[in-house]
Length: 115
Image (cartoon, rainbow, N blue to C red; front, top):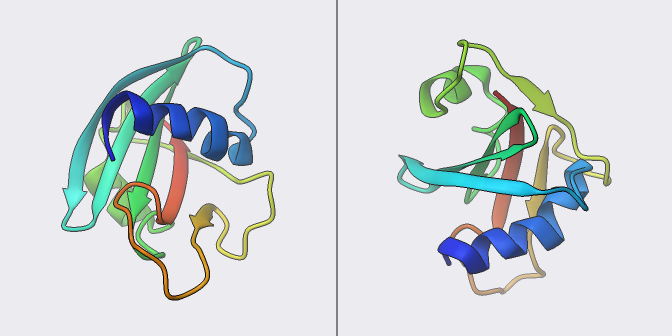
């Protein structure tokens, strides 16, 4: 899933888990960050963010990976921790009971950084 429908899903279901809701979000685009990782860029007012998707957990919480994969504005970032419970903070998983059908950019681990 990509484009407007993906961004609508993120706005309604995922970003509220990080405390971002009922705000005007401007999507800036996406980039491939690895074989199973993508970064989605957006802004809220004057704040810039990168939402990292990965099919399995771990990379988004690795600062070296973030510095390599994300277009950081000043070389630094700030992790935005989920306000919803997550055993993987600063990341948030979206999974279903096994067996389930994998869906790129939907089922996996998400990490949000302010850039």
